[in-house]
Amino acid sequence: MKKYFDFEGNGTSYRREIIGGLTTFLSMAYILAVNPSVLSLQGVEGIPDSMKMDMGAVFVATALAAFIGCMIMGLYARYPIALAPGMGLNAFFAFTVVLTMGIPWQTALTGVLFSGVIFAILTVTGLREYVINSIPMEMKMAVSAGIGFFITFVGLQSAGIITMDEATLVGLGAIHDPKVLLALGGLVITVILMARKVPAAIFIGMIITAVIGLFFGLVPMPEGIVGSVPSIEPTFGVAFDAFKDPAAFFNMQFLIVVLTFLFVDFFDTAGTLVGVASQANMIKDNKLPRADRALLSDSIATITGSIFGTSTTTSYVESTAGVAAGARTGFASVVTGTLFLLAIFVSPLIVTFTSEVTAPALIIVGALMVSNLSKVRWDQFEVAVPAFLTMFMMPLTYSIATGIAIGFVFYPITMIMAGRRKEIHPMMYALFVIFVLYFVFITE
Image (tube, rainbow, N blue to C red; front, side, top):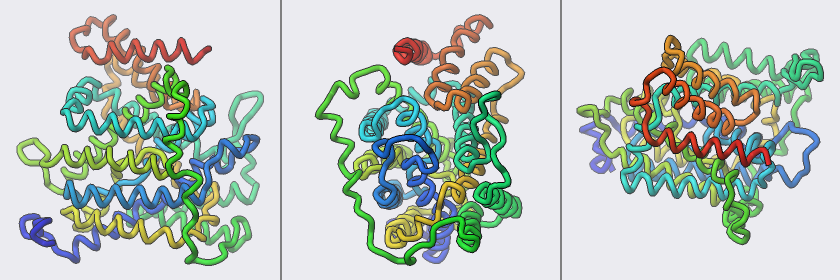
């Protein structure tokens, strides 16, 4: 084992790898509660049960997708990078695709499956570099920041901190409501832990918030800590059901869904991979060894996760916490994956993680993603406008896809008018046409 992972060459040991893997798990364990909450549209009232995914099944699917993703990344790519269903992508799945577009969650899982397969093909053929280089850095950062705003808005809404207002569209919620106060208290606690740089601050904040909620009777009391594994039958293999009716995905709307899943996962993975590898000093001669394997691991995890019944599985930037704790090889990811597998046996606890308890995690993760705004050249109007529209329209239209579409339509227009036609990659013109058609078909 030591030889396979090259412990000596990486200057590490079993102890450092185990501690690193455990640290990464604790830093991202919040997804076990947040993902079922988001995909089941917990806290959203007035919608039929058919639009909501089974929380127990999604919980198991989340844990299994994370387990397999981490194991492939650890054993095949040998990187200390953990994977799990991604934040932002799950919000896009639930609130844009299902809730706004009205696409059944079963078909949405097919979209995740398609994006994973395309990602794998792009990786194997080497086309990934062509696609990555075609998108301007400012637009990549704008998408990431926009998703951050969107996630934060979803968190504020699910907690009741922000509510609908007939006069102003949105307004401050009933902050004297005990459950809203619980969410606000959880947010304050998590912010304090983050400011103090406490490891696994988001996860610890959720635990403390849940305990407070139990003490005041604001969240359900679990029947136990350890219990039987929930059935995954409601979601397992459902991604293949859409093939019975090809018309469900041979349309422009479904194409946009697949492209958005693919786009966000594509650049989220690339950015995370470079960031974690840089922190671990793994980049040699400005190149990342085994990058193809890491990207292929991510795509396989997405395909597997869609079959289990969850949104896109992607690499987690929280892996940097494990690297900071000493992780240097894929063995740390194997440890993280094993812990995710064991987590399926504590399913009774999931009932305590209500929307009020998970909302602070959404808000904080959103805030962290918005930091990418510093990488946008705001002094260049032709760049600033499409970047601004991309991130601003996501929460306003309640759609990540629409935000991306608007920004990518404006980008070639502003660049051409500014006399910078030569800087526009041909792929951007293709995306311009696709997104214009998106608006034409979406209004029908």
